[in-house]
Image (cartoon, rainbow, N blue to C red; front, top):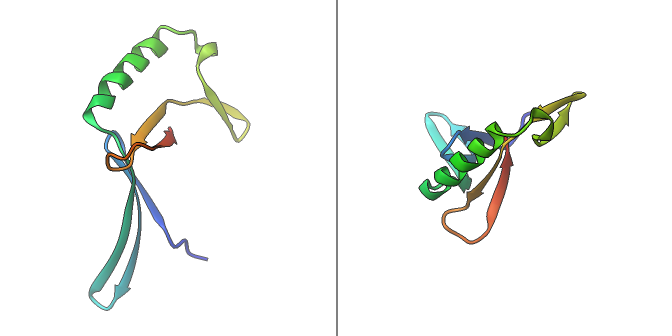
Length: 90
């Protein structure tokens, strides 16, 4: 079974969902940008990283993956300037 959608994460820039259909040499592309990181958010991200550097490792947010606690950094990305935000945890 093949997945219909493919996801692309360009770190620090965007998250994109797309599907390609090939008909001979023609490629039909359907894509949606699920979120973009704008320049004002870089400053906020830098401050959060400084804050995390000064915290004890035990205080960092973690998500359990395959039985291991993996630290993560939360990024809020906007969808082309709209007021809502999408959440991406990396």
